[in-house]
Each structure stands twice: as structure tokens, then as C-alpha cells.
Image (cartoon, rainbow, N blue to C red; front, side):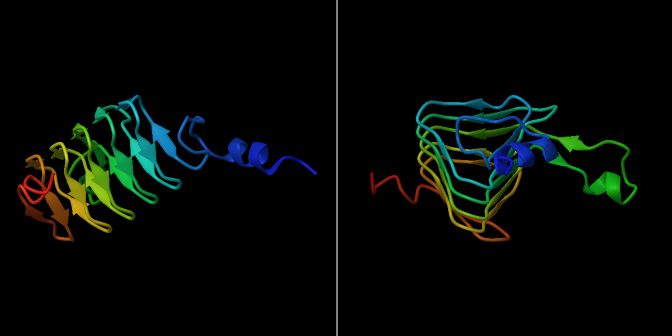
Length: 144
């Protein structure tokens, strides 16, 4: 019997990485020290940049993608729009969340599960919740 992992890797177009065999990383994101990325998560930095600081925890089924092709798909543009993403140090991203290109999340912030993070700058110590997202600025400042 053939090794299922070898067979599977023939059919997908992402490189193995240090996080998990089912983490998909495209492009060359800058990933800090002591970072956890859960299985079935996608980090898409192709043709743009993603910076993930130290001590970040990215849960399972998270999408962090600098690319947005909806305008191209419906005929409003001929290009895929790409914007950089920054997660500063000590950011937690809950399961099934989406971080869109252009987002900048300040240090010691938490993205709640199933949140869609818009392309804005979010201050440190924030709690980001929901879709549409709501930002509770400084939520964790007095708790740390």
C-alpha cells in the first residue's frame, strides 16, 4: 500500500512547513518565534506580504489572505487586489476566522472565533468579534 501522505502531496500545490502537514502557506510570509498555526489554516502571502509576530496563536480553519479577487470575478477589475497584513506580537486568532488583506492587528489582541477582520488598523489589546466585526479597543489592557 502506498503512503497516503506522499500520494496526497502530489495533488496539492503547497510546500511542507514546520507547523502542520495540513497548513497551507503560499508566498513568503514573515513568521515570528513561538507561533502556532492550527491544521487546515491558510496563510496566503502570494505577491504581497504577511507579517506574523512572536507568540501568536492561530487556531484551526483560519484564513489569512492578502488576495481579494471578487472585483475581477464580476468584471470590475482585471487584477486581483492584494494588500499586506500584519499581526503584531501576542495575537490570538480564533477558529474559522478570516483576516482580509489590509488588516493590521495590534499586539495582545484577540480575534474571536468566526470573525471576519476587515482591512483596518486595530489598536493593541483589542477584542475583535463577529461579522461584521466589532472592535472593543483596549479590552485586555487592564486585564494584563
